[in-house]
Amino acid sequence: MIEVKNVTKVFEDTKALDNLCLHVKKGTVYGLIGPNGAGKTTIIKHLTGVYKQDAGEVLIDGNNVYENIKLKNKTICIGDDLYFFPTYTIADMAKFYAGLYPDWDWVRYESLKEVFKIDTKRRVRKLSKGMQKQVAFWLGICTKPDVMILDEPVDGLDPVMRRNVWKLMLQDVAERDITVLVSSHNLRELEDVCDHVGIMFGGKIVLEKSLDDAKGNIHKVQAAFSGFMPDELTQELNVLHSEQFGSVYSLIIKGDSGEIKNKIAAYSPLLCDILPLTLEEVFIYELGGIGYESANILL
Image (tube, rainbow, N blue to C red; front, side, top):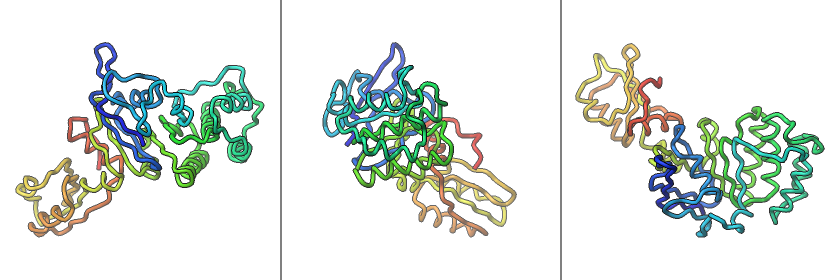
């Protein structure tokens, strides 16, 4: 559905994107994560046709995005920095969107009044940031897009509205097979909604997998021994991080879980448990392996 092939973008002396490749399947929710300055917003602006790449291809359904009106009619982007015309009410903005997007759905617009519960006669620019974000989703969903691109989408929303917004989007993924790419620093929330994740660093994708596979080769292990943990064991395993709490060692280890357990078992541990890893921990230790600071993160 979305293909980014070897895309490079340079701003003066800064290479914001460096031969970037990215793949998003149709009907999935793809979480794009990375530290500040990794290039996430830059690639989003390419996917929405705001920027033109210096090299490579940015494709949706096999078609180039830049200056492609047909694709833009089926793509909606909701960012953290919203813009509405100063004097326009919600109703005015709805009419404006209806004139831009051929598949605008007035029936859904009316039905979503029960979800967002904001007076449509109010000027959008006079609303709080959270309420403006609600309006952006209200209007965006009613365009009936094939692709939704979201940059810090639910920042500023209260917990109930966050849940409502995600429910509406996931409903469209299930019923209309839309494709969602979402960039966010809220990794706990992404973990609940994403099928696939891509981790960016230095203008590149350093990991791109299904969420289950991304967690599959990094493990949190708690182990205890009758004395100290054998030095030979740490040499045999790919230990990304280690901490000791009394007689218990807490380890982050990269590799096959079965092989890890067998190697530890060979040293007759008093305790050996493999615990589930969160997306946040995957992010920290994947980037830690390529030089991103993770030494001060507690396990």
